[in-house]
Image (cartoon, rainbow, N blue to C red):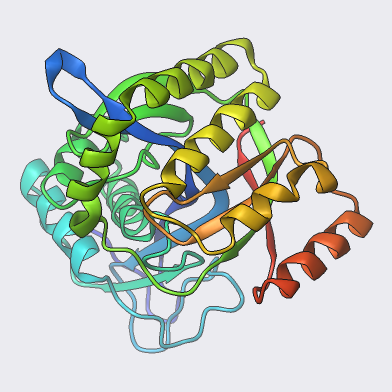
Length: 306
């Protein structure tokens, strides 16, 4: 029985999941002859947190919560709450009385996989609450019942069919980048643009096949420069169907800043540079001034794993 002695602090259990900075690749894949949308998500060191305490009362906050989390942090969102219900049904468990709390670094609707990260963080919290081993198959079943998803439930890169929730190929943890990026105004409804994307993919099937082949070779050889070149190509192809206002200018200045490549959120509003090495403080200043001249605030984050 989960109890806390009178006067003792509440016992909090947490689940954490990273988000993404869009994708290193998004395009068509044809397993079994049926076209599907394949992605290689670009994990970023920004996260979604979900907490549960079977003992919490009013005013009890997670002791390990980020210091900027206010005392009135929201409970679970609709998709995360659905994920919790499906988890409990799948494992035949009953949630004890208690309190949910959550926090996220991830912006909604811009390409950071915020809703998927919320779902996965919720499931990881429940796996820990019930002392169950993390089960990727169960996570996939829950995700497939809720939304098209990114592969943030894995702790490595993967070629992933986001609609079918199928991992085509695991790509390991040998690639990493430092990034400088901006978020353009507005959000993208992924479901609404999917038919447009499919038509574009059919028109550019040969280019996407070459792009994906080069990307996978880059991962296989552990060559971040090759991965960055393929990612830039994927971003250029994306510009033809879901254009970013700043993309052409960002691409034109890539060599000036010594960036290895350019990335985007293919169905979002992120645009940025990939660097295989950490930018010097002086370069960060130049990048910040450049993006400010385009009307945007620059952010820096580490993506990938190496």
